[in-house]
Length: 125
Image 1 (cartoon, one colour):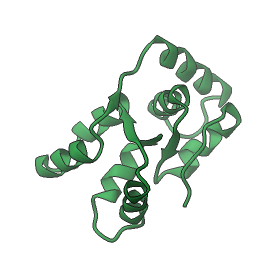
Image 2 (cartoon, one colour):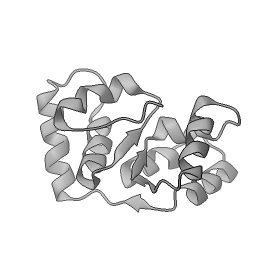
Image 3 (cartoon, helix red, strand yellow):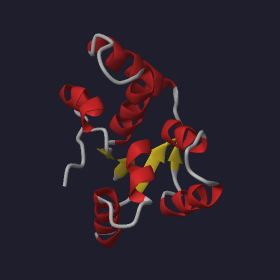
Image 4 (tube, helix red, strand yellow):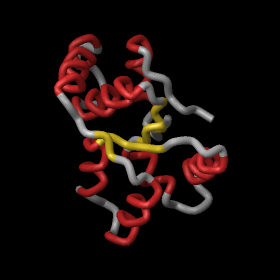
């Protein structure tokens, strides 16, 4: 299972981008794709036009709800990272991927690398 971060899906919608190539490789390998409801909310906030939001919805039809377990883990990630770098939303997205046992595909590797000690695995190839 691979969870897609907001930055990744936005860039993956640009034909020929590195993210586009990674996404196509994952689809060819029949990887299960999902994204947290938090990342989906970021998509809905923009900057994508409606037609690209609809494409994203077809590519990643599963949005994983954010629950109490995620909230507790996100708060712990935020606290453990001493509130450095990234945002609390990053903590929420990471928590969702961790609970699902999913790797996270992101274009903002530096924002999520800090969660490696908690077990978050990033898609880097």
